Length: 124
Image 1 (spheres, rainbow, N blue to C red):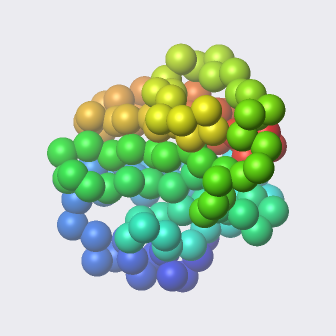
Image 2: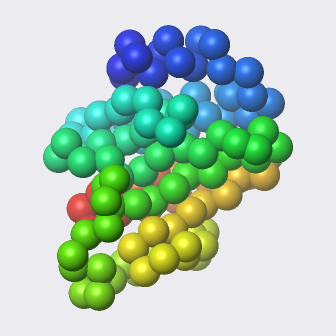
């Protein structure tokens, strides 16, 4: 865990903060190659030095995980494919998806599937 993210989380006022903490911990525990920092005013996960999955904490009535391929559109977008075996992801673009959590119960019940999805995504 990152001290930068720990400090951010210490001051976060969000109704689903405990779910964010649980999911954050589960993702980091699942893969030693995943690191974190703060991006877009939220915890963000890196793999191989590239941002790949970032929390979206606004609006405050839900939490989203944005699955992306870095800060800039990559030149291989047309060739990129990813199969979401969980069916949880909504596609925003051919190489950008989102998983939405409307409440804590959903975050907890989908945690294992989302952690698996994150680990598949960072390698795609």
